[in-house]
Image 1 (cartoon, rainbow, N blue to C red):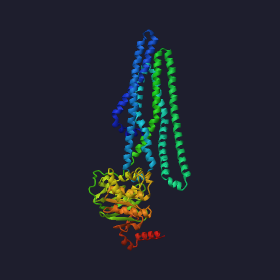
Image 2 (cartoon, one colour; image 1 turned 90 degrees about the vertical axis):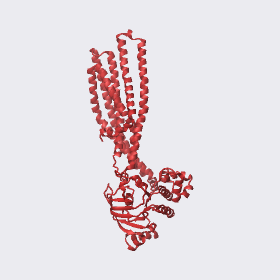
Image 3 (cartoon, rainbow, N blue to C red; image 1 turned 180 degrees about the horizontal axis):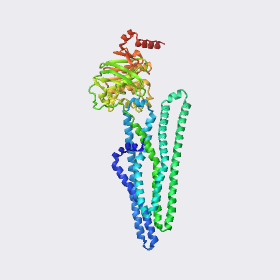
Image 4 (cartoon, rainbow, N blue to C red; image 1 turned 90 degrees about the horizontal axis):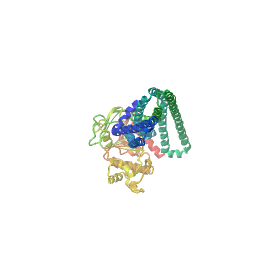
Length: 583
């Protein structure tokens, strides 16, 4: 992205901190004035001493020294404000950007996360924004100081010797043009660094989360080899970055020396011809030194500038990720929900590969009805359920909840009324209590315990080392599959939704755990509109209706007895399952 485009996207973050920024720039001006006064004082003392030493008194020297000491106190106070409050402002902007990025991630659909690496996303909202603190603080400050020093230096130097000043200042744009190439290469190298550190994070995360599989297959050496390859690639990119940075800084040093050569040679010639006084040449040299120090500081800041711009670019790319699922204009919250669901000519295909998943589905589910979804893998069962809470939107057709198109109600009210229990249970790193309370933030401890009782989880929770305050570990690793599933059911009990989606909730459990969890699910489903994706067909005998999905459509419909009599796909699936269990 162009630098100008990125700056336009970044500048609004200063709006909250306008007062701090203006004060910071005022302090920057004060420090600049304090620095620029010293050469004038020395020029005055030198001129007086060389022309009439009798005029140079102790009182005059002490007065000048006192004025300069007062200026240094002002400089110290201004510098403290810049170093402390200015940096806090930069950190606050970084924090605001990170919050915006995280909030944006919450609005992105499953399709985005299906095609993104978590390590890359984490890199964009953490390490990529670290350099924004320095950038946000120093960028306006450094350029403002540079402008002031360049302007003041030019005016003072021009009064001393205009021709020499013009020669000096003509070298600056030549230096800027010469440095541009290396500056751009540094920017590209930083972008490659950011991208690769995201890949490195993704590699580490993948290996650590799958550490049991790694150990089970004794593939530690394989993982180390893959990590070593990525790590060496990162070193290669950094080596390239440092080469461009070194070339960039060396170019600056060459022009730095060239300017001093001009001052020495041209200044010496002008002084020999009486066109510049010795005291003026001393002051001139000091101002050129100040000017060169400013240019050098800006050049050095260019590295920080490029780091900051790279972070902003990666942040902008994340913020530009399209939000597919959002509240339509005029969307209203749901009121009391009965749970009547209607699919009207619904079709769906994933946007990235456009493979048809559902085709012209027409379905009516009555309030409180228990519907089971069965069929071959890839038939669209999970997708059909995912359309109800709007994890995806239909490609065609509409879905109604109590007669209202779900796209015309607010997402929060819709999802508050839809509970999901999945096969792959996700527990957050924290306590048992915190994981259940996640179903309804703000619920009392007694309400959490009652939800656990209804889910059949209270007894085993009380038997844990710290009861409800037991730490469950990363992704709940300290609990068994059945325990995790009952905690997730308790979470949904606490939420108390009117519509319930059970996505193969017992498929991965052993027989004993399945029995316990099934009893919990039966209690949870009582009185609620329930859609169950069945893996073990023996568990859905009691369903009011069974839908068989195959070839992207509903091909059979009825209760267990009716479908068995048809001897169609359901009959084949059921008898195959029985044979498998007998075997």
